[in-house]
Figure 1: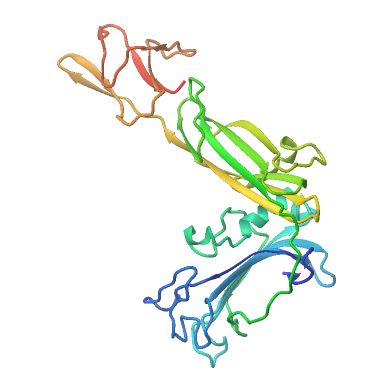
Figure 2: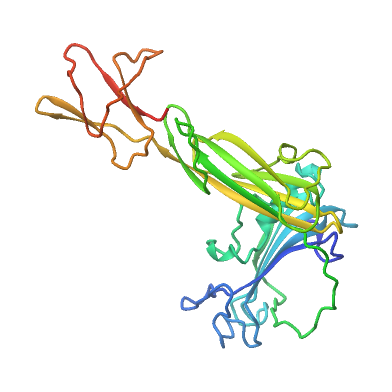
Amino acid sequence: MGSFHAFGNGNQNQFDSLLCACLPCADDANAVGVVGQTCNPNDRICGPEPRHAPANKICFSGVGDYTFTTGNKTVKAVFRVDIEDRSEGNSQSSSPPPDRYRMRLWLLDPSCGRNPDPNSAEAMALRIAASADPTKIASLATTEELKVSIQPDIDDGGDMTQGNHQIHPATGAQCAASILAPAARIDIATEIAGLTPGGVLTFGKTAQGYQGVQAPAFVYRTTITNGGTVTLTNLSVAETTGMSVADTSGLYFAPDATLPVGGWATRYRTNTWGLDTVNTVIVAGGSGQDGALVVAASTAMALVAPAPRLSIQNAGGSFILGWPADTAPGFVLETTTNLTLPATWSVISNATNPFVIPNTPVNRARFYRLRMP
């Protein structure tokens, strides 16, 4: 699959995340695991024994160098590596189960349709998706699940047939003293509201819409703020919807714009959706003092439900219309006598639920519908 290198100087081969996890052993139905704790202590097969270790799985991600064949590695790639230490060797003479590994690569190369800059908005979206975030990992179905599903260009892994993965405790080595630079920080808040007939917008992390003749409309509000103590430069913004990534930097910032301390930018936009849709906005910037990269992301979700259904009953010669009691406010009951297009529908302003149809038509059909204007 080519050649890959993920270790080097901190500027070009960057580690975005590192996470150790406690996992149950796949071959032991009684094994238990909790992210952040040592699992199966004193177990030589399903635990981190015989040598004491903080966990039996490690995940790390970042940017490395890749080549399609051999020779110098000139192509940048976002990577995510998962390694699970399940035994003390992977040969015929060692005890099962074998160790496991998985490596995923997203190649930053024009031949793959991607920007080669590892700090571009598109690459930052991939790096956020691949990162092993300790605050999110426990809520995922497995430790290998990504927060945003973007298909990798290379996905290699499985049981090891030779060699031995080993996860050891930390050493006692100490980092040298460093001089603290002014802190760079960038914040983002994305919210969503359903577009109501009256124009009243209630923003939150989720919003409900109803599918009718037309797909429901939603309004997004995204605010980017410099919450640090230095000016930010090299600003970029990417938005992910489903499995697509779009560079929307120009919709927030002019080329070569900077964001001063306490500065902010807000954008409103409207979209219509026919299905539940998750939208994530990722913003990146560099410290105006030393170029240190800062990244933030925020997610909002549009929820789309079918329009409520009308029911009709005959009660003693009268017809009664009804609809679900939990129907959202804003729906109106409309009526017409002719469905030939273009049909003319009239709003019944005094409609209640249930609604007794007055003056039941005898010689002419009448039609009713619920609609969110």
